[in-house]
Image (cartoon, rainbow, N blue to C red):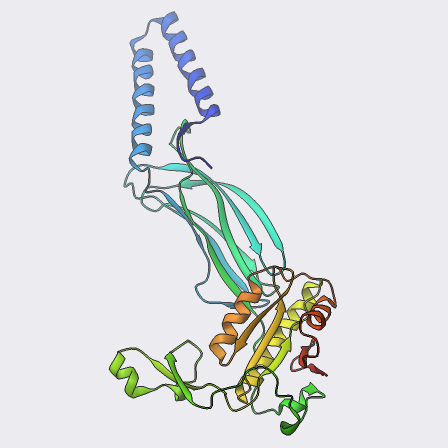
Length: 342
């Protein structure tokens, strides 16, 4: 939308009719009160324009969502706050915003007219129900502010969008054996050693939220004045391939994300590094190497940030075409369910 000052057609029409009536009455009655009213109307319109012009570049609409991620099937407050730094001037505003869940493909556009009070600003408040996992966004697509008389308007004012992740259901991996939850998973000495050759030494990297506190290198952290983590590159096991087969059913995808998060957490808890494959926005499979919980959270966030609606069975077909002969764990619905594809 083009930015700048403009005129409201309806407001100009109303002002024109009002001035025509006042001038006509004055011409007929020749009353000084009507002349004074005409002058006051002109002065009020000029003052209203001046107050709006003084706030150009300072008016802002900002979407408000929870700062941390939320769980499924929970309600949370959200809305839009319009800042008004003027101590005495009030405005009205038209706000058009798009509410969407990128993972499910849902979107809804809403337009509202808001009163923007002096100093306090304006507020749009509503409550959302997080029925499905995904990245929920509130994106302001249009924001126009009008003066008190709705004659002049500022188009394309500054706006800030917001997002929050609706996270899969968390299940504690605990001490369960991988072979009890993954059908056909081989014994330790039967694992196919394909993929990356791991260095048994340790590497030092910066701390990522979710890292085990036991792995923090305290002496080096004190020296560098920031948290550093000591991590074994091989994590003690061979890499495990995991394939996420998304479908065209939103509820199935929800359960698949629950299973994926629980299954990957279980592998990481038992020191298995993961090569995760899933369908992204492109034609081929996306892939990430995951060695700790922080990387898993990042991968889940990346999956939830694009549309997850795909044809059933497409992921398995692409895996067979792009990585022929690779063995992998196929994520299935239900907590800790999986199948080892030979």
